[in-house]
Image (cartoon, rainbow, N blue to C red; front, side, top):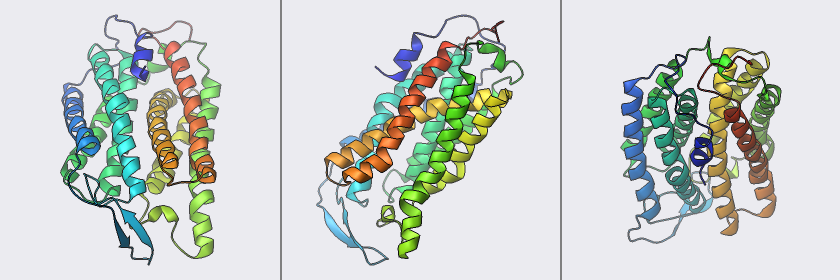
Length: 315
């Protein structure tokens, strides 16, 4: 059962809320994302041309294994498996949730709008990573369009909300404090995990982190530490202070964390089973994200359970 199936049981079918204004451009951008993501994920998962695994000497003198076939033919075997896992999660979870949330958004649902924004944030992260992080392939232009459409779709969706009235849609039973603390802790963990487990040890040894492989840098580190972690911390702090923007960002980031966490857990599990990462690496990198993702699922369900498309008089 996908997140959208679970949340659909919490959604009402009432009239459009004055808290959200429907944007036709959001609809068109989201439809474009759905179409191109179907193409990108299907080709990434199922297209396999002729070719064989080969070794490659990197700029730093290391030897890595390159896939040599399929869409990710110029990526390392570890990264290609991660990209395929991401394609699977996007196809099975991301796209259906995007469709469902868009339909609810089109009906003026506050819940649908928040779910849509969170899903667009995931698509932005995913295809920003693909456009900048994957070895150049035939879908590069598709990644760029998906990244751009997700960015502007997210911005326009955020602009759809009336922040002044948004907090009144949450009931007094919302675990606001717990969600705020979780968001801050998640941001701090994300801010520290890459330096502690990878970057600083590599600096001490005077070399690049092993995750660089055949690439020039690690895009994930830059996005996580430079954008996602500060956003989580800021959202948590604002929610604890009952800032209306905190309600908006915390809701979106919870949905985003559930989807991204599912992506990372799927990739990490497959990489461990294939022998690309050992158990200590799995525990260090994957288990911590598993804990954060489980909490994100719990708090996401709690949030939508205490969110109404109509203004609550309990808040």
